[in-house]
Image (tube, rainbow, N blue to C red):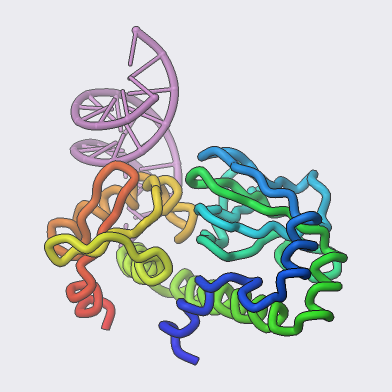
Length: 228
DNA sequence: TCATTAAATTTCT
DNA sequence: AGAAATTTAATGA
C-alpha cells in the first residue's frame, strides 16, 4: 500500500460502516468534549486505559526528558486515536497529549474498544491502518535523525506534514494546516528553536518554503528537487 | 555543522 | 504593556 492510500485511510472515520444500533451504543459510552488550544488532554499520571478518539482538531504527542525538554513523537489529525496503553499497548505511559488547536475528543474505555473490535473486525482493521501509518512515520524520522543534517531533517519533516495536513495552495506553495512554532518543530527533529529558525529562513531564501508566525508552506516541486 | 548563551526585535493578546 | 515567537550574533565543541 503506498503513502497516498494510507493517507486517505487515515482520514476515514474509524466507525464508518457500523450499524445504527452499535453507533447509538457507542454514543452512550464515549463522552465527547471540546478541548481548547494548548490544553493537555492526557498526562502520565492519568488513567491509562482510555482510548481517545480525535474527531476533529490537532493533537501533539510528546515525552519529557529528565532535564525537562520535550520530544514530540507524533502529531495527529482528524479521525486518529491515541492513549490506551494497557491491553492495547498503544503508545507509552509516559506520553503527554496536547491540543495544538481547539479539538473535539471522545474518550472510550479500553475494554469497550476490545469488545467493539471483536464485534466489528473492520474497526480493528482501520486501527491497524492508523497505527501502521504512524509507525512508518516514526521509522522515517529515526532514519532521518540518525544521519542527516538539520536542513534535511526539517525538509523531511515538512514533506511528511504537508502530506498529512495539506492546506491551501497559493502561488506554488502548499500550506501545512497546522499551527507550529519553531520551538515545536525543533522538538520533532531533535534540534533547537534557534537553529530551526535560521534553517527555515535559509530555505525560504532558496524558495523552498514560505514561513509566517506559527505557519509554514512548502513549494512541493522545490522540495522534491532538494530531497530527491 | 550546530548547540548554547545572550540579547534584540517583531507580533500577538 | 506584557507575553510569546522569531531573529541575530558570538562562541566553542
